[in-house]
Amino acid sequence: MKSYAIIGFGCAGYHAAKAIRKNDPDGKIVVYSDTSDPPFNPMLSTYYASDMLSLEGTFPFGSMDEIVKDLQLELRSETKAAHVDAARREIELADGKREPFDSILVATGASAIVPASLTENAGRYFLMRTLEDAQNLRNYIEKENVKTAVVIGASMAGIKTAEIFYRKGIPTTLIDGASGLFPLAAYPDVAEMIQEKLNDLGIKQIYDAQVAAIRPNTVELSDGRTLEADCICLCIGVHANIQLVANTKAVEGTEVKIGKGIIVDEQMQTNVPGIFAAGDCCEGKNLQTGETSVIGLWANASAQGECAGKNMAGKTAFYYGNILHNITHFMDMDFISLGDITLPGEHRCFAGKDFFVEVCMDADQLNSMNIFGQYRISGILKSHLTKRLLHGDDNLTPAQKGMLLAEGLPAELINLLGDKKS
Ligand SMILES: Cc1cc2nc3c(=O)[nH]c(=O)nc-3n(C[C@H](O)[C@H](O)[C@H](O)COP(=O)(O)OP(=O)(O)OC[C@H]3O[C@@H](n4cnc5c(N)ncnc54)[C@H](O)[C@@H]3O)c2cc1C
View 1 (tube, rainbow, N blue to C red):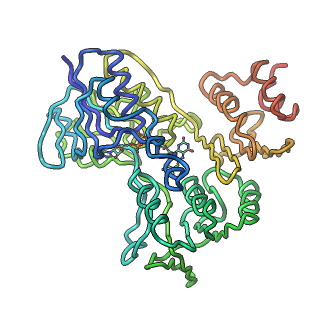
View 2: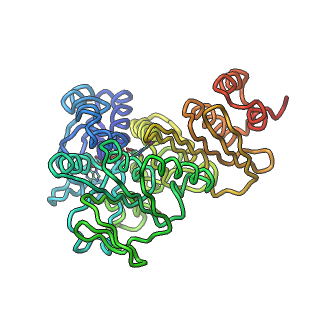
View 3: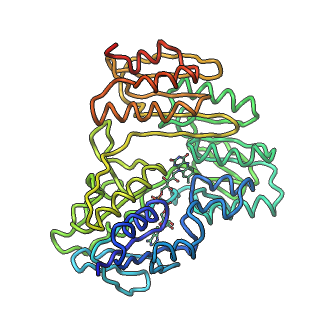
């Protein structure tokens, strides 16, 4: 009987366990999780923190008891893995205990970035990544009389955290070192358009502002300005949890390759046979650059976990890669970004009835796009861009064109995107 280990039980870990069990009904699957909660959806954390969603609602795959029973898992909950000993095929746990495996998946996700320089002598501040982070903020808002808030980081997590305060009528300031909102996903003019809307909703924003320190109830900027707030949230990004394989006392030939994440091939296997990684902790292929990179998305973690699980169980599965992709709903607005906005090309803008689209075309090929105010067309457009990158097929199908037209996309844009041969 084969013995599988899964470290980390979020979206990627769950989908791997499910795929292993489907393909190997008898194998032993041991799950090591540093929490006792069932797999949690971090995308829902701000809805839970703002009391819009129940705790159960943040667990998309049900309770831990149900999952353990359905997938016949051996669960080591509240058990932190410290090191993967690739040479001896053993996991070293934080308490020093060692356990063997035949094949292993590292699915440890990512952690919020917390620079020591900002947080020394900080007083209380909040993060938004784990369930515990969401619980901490929710409890604080419930118990304390929060009258003002500052959110550091105008990213997807930052805007959703600002929304928590907005929904409660708490005046909020959003701060970022970049020159505008969503610096990795939005073109400058689209960012400006959204910034104006946020302004109209009363969200103050300060850009090009480096935070020098967080002090009790005060944020200090490097230009000397200070902002007082009852509640301070730090949302400046995440780093992949790679320590398990980074810290190798490795025997030569068994060092796992890492960059910003654990580097995997198209079968989600690392350079060391039998050691797999999936989700936010790994670097899979970025279809636009051809390089590996961390693409921290829920759908990515799910597909990568499933692919890893199948391969671990002896089947052959491939996950060829992904593109940068964001769909964010906040304060009744929808913003979608597809592709790498740093790639060069000619920008063209199109206005629909209630939405705006900007595309960046290199020759007649789509490199990236921003959509503001329309989320329903994102699936078609993402699969269109992915199809071109994977199969070189530049055409939209008649059904896709019909759906885009029905959603109000101008015919000129549809032709530009995917009517190359007509
Ligand atoms: C606020 C917010 C908003 C987001 N919005 C979006 C969005 O709109 N769209 C989108 O696609 N994605 C979004 N994401 C990202 C998405 O949630 C992640 O890409 C996805 O959850 C990654 O899943 P994962 O399984 O790789 O990692 P995780 O969900 O982080 O799971 C990893 C698990 O491993 C455990 N673990 C870590 N280290 C160890 C260890 N040493 N031993 C044992 N266990 C360990 C962790 O506790 C955790 O339970 C958002 C994330 C956040 C925080």
